[in-house]
Length: 138
Image (cartoon, rainbow, N blue to C red; front, side):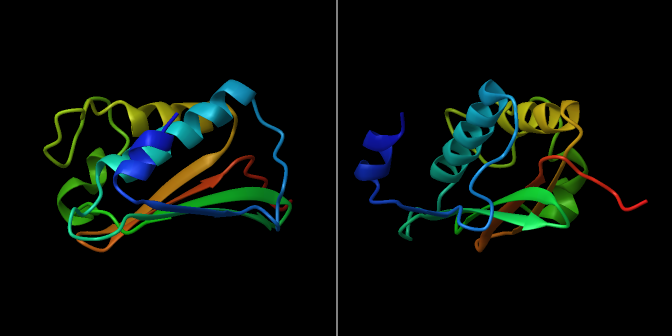
């Protein structure tokens, strides 16, 4: 779906699913999560850098965790941290910004009992971590 855009901007998209090659999850949600996170990483890239986007899964305490990192524009979390997963909130000017992608991802993850967090630094990039089925000890 994003092949043309990736080629056009010479983005480097890598993945490592060795530590957790499978996840039991609703397929349509999983596809939506990957597409939204890839779309955001491509959309909010730094135009003076080669976009680098990395998908990685891990198994942590019996939970499958996905980390998606990029070297994009990043987000000022001090200013916007409380709005990150809210509907129709955008943090950069872009003609295709709708403020729906992260809102949808959060709702999909929450509805399946998971957890999503975001780390970001302006002009450095963003890492989104999804714990698909958060299990607690005890």
